[in-house]
Image (cartoon, rainbow, N blue to C red; front, side, top):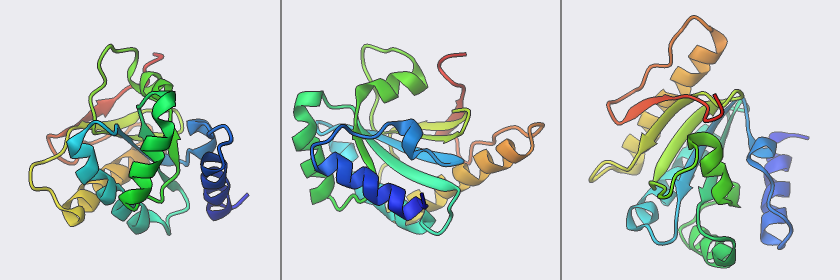
Length: 175
């Protein structure tokens, strides 16, 4: 299945009330996962930037951008509405367990939070957003993180380099 078709199928499934796809089914060779919640004011600012990133990376078949709401399953309609109202067209999951998959169990999740991961779910993470950050700077910084994760995945001897001090290496939670 082509990338565009997979995204359309994932969006159709999530908007038709069917069970949401899993992160694994949406994952590319490198995946940007944007975690957010409807109760998070900075997330309202970041989601349009996530869409700008998705648009900027759309031609790279090896990269996927996925948004994951950590809202409770009962708040799924509200999360989908907020994402739609903010112009987000990236595949959307409303699934707290994805957060635990990547970062381990925690009583309190920090959002907004980005993870740029390879197929083994290693890569980089960024917690929070920079004050006054605009879409252009966001796209540039996350694209640099994507390039670093791609380079490390291609050359196992190469370390994943954080593009700015806001980023840190992410190790899979299950290791």
